[in-house]
Amino acid sequence: MTPKDKIQSRAVELSIEHRFLCLEWSTGCGKTLGAAKIVSKILKDKPDAKGYLICKESTHKKNWVDDFKKHKMSKVAKSMKTILYASLKNQHKKADFIILDECHALTPKRIKALRQILQKGTRIIFLSATIPKEKKQLMNDLCKKVYYDKISLNKAFELKLLPEPSLVVHKVYLNKEIVNGKYWEFEARRPKNRKSGINKFCKHKDLFMTLKNTPKTWGVICQGSEQEHYDALTNQMAYYQGLSEDREVPYLVREGCRNKFLNIASNRKKFIAEVKTQTVKDLVKDFRLDNSRFICFTGSINQVKELGSSNAVHSKNKGTINQDLVDCFNNLECSELFAVKMLREGINLTNIERGIITQLDSGIGSFFQMLGRCLRHEFPEMHLLVVQDTQDVVYFNKSMENFNEKYITWR
Image 1 (tube, rainbow, N blue to C red):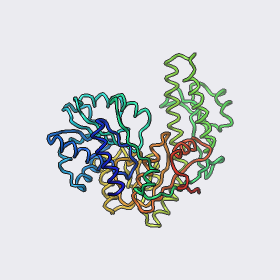
Image 2 (cartoon, rainbow, N blue to C red):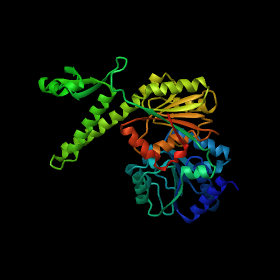
Image 3 (cartoon, helix red, strand yellow):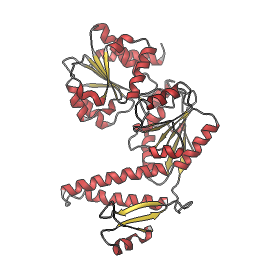
Image 4 (tube, one colour):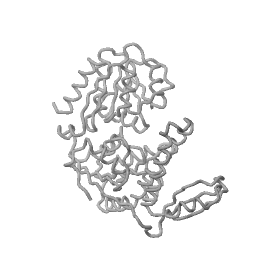
């Protein structure tokens, strides 16, 4: 019996003992097949059992269909209704069992909707590679005794379930001077009338005097280098964060400042991704010259356009475009795939040799999800870009807490 067979057999045994079971398994351990085998056991004990398979994205649904066919589990497939989390609120038929794929997608509203299909004895199988603490709290509130069976990425490497990867980290630095005439615009103050208002432009070093000497109804915009732009956003964030945490400030004002802080933080994150565009371009060019099959996780749709690719999966695509692009890649008809906040989880991609992670998130889960897409190849190589002396380094250090340093090389 292979290590993967042993893991899945153990999952079936655990499901007999635990009504609420979470397979918190790394990529490559076979969460899909493990869940299918648990349902097969349920059907053996109760042939007329009916349940739900709940997925995060439509592309994940097709992945399950393909896996059921591959493992000849049509009986299991027919026993359940496959829906997205967004459709949970429309379901009313009680379930004997429920599979919650990518269960970290649960929210308080979705938990409430989930309760309407539960009945006495309903069994729940939670699936995810990484689950944040706040999501586990939601799961524990729904089910009082969830059993967590965890297999980390490092454990999967140790068990030879996955090939050992090469993580190449590229150091990127903010320009302290304006390069090639490209400057960044920082809105220090909005004009009173957004549509027809007047803006005054200045350099960062002249901001204080410009604000003082410019009519209050005018907007003020600073034009400067990457470093000046980053520092201005960071200072603005600190200002609104301070107000949002000041108990002497009225509650509604604090809430407004909190929202402003979050909005600026989002803009700063997009900016950090954007300054990496040229480095990503260079990597993509090299990959194409080497005829490599690769996936590139980008920071925005605009960045994809600047990189010059039409093979991009994102939320603005209509109809079946995203699935068509994935199929093109998996059928080996296309050799590159770009993704904007998609394809990080719940989907198998064929023979990816290399990958690029343009931007990390605050949670460690995003890194492992994106890395996992490349771990199907014999010699997987993932490239990660980190802007030095910025919040990017904080995200990177957090992501590396549970990752073995021996797989990392620096450029």
